[in-house]
Image 1 (cartoon, rainbow, N blue to C red):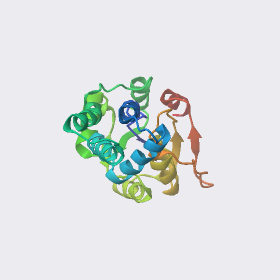
Image 2: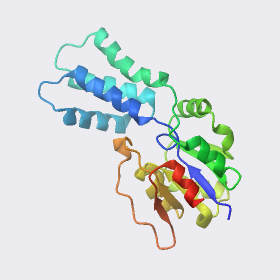
Image 3: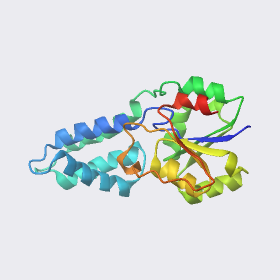
Image 4: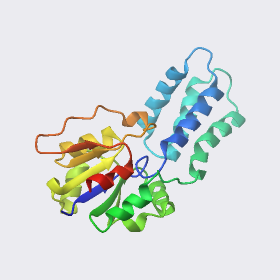
Length: 225
């Protein structure tokens, strides 16, 4: 039976957070705080990111704000420029599809209704989608500011989705799995080893009439669909 498959983008279809993690590692090394541990600096940055929001531009602003908050010596423009560069270079990384994504999408296209659902800054996400080379494989491409229960309810209504035949597929418990289940959809969890820490959450137990699957890799969708 033809299903509706809502598919996340960052760290589900292509690598994303690994570039942010490398920038964070370099940032903490550059800060070289004499009293705060790596984990303590990261906690301050996490809280700043929570306030600033998503995307590479907001990430750059978070690095700058954290550096200005934690730097132990007088800050000069050269230091700020280096920190700014750590964030801005995120834009220049090549877009790398995860293993099996292209082949799996091509397998699913004639069988099911595919919809790409990603959250973040409109311009940044649209550019990544265009660079991916897979946009044409989706019936709908949707960029939303947040993925929560209300978002999924709105999509069900706008796209006239039938919840028992609709699945949300992604790597984030917080944005992809738990709110989709709470909105009455099925879900497939595809863990990624570098999922953004602010997307971490315990995966909720599905309601009695909903299905939750966990698969090791995106290509395993071919087994189920």
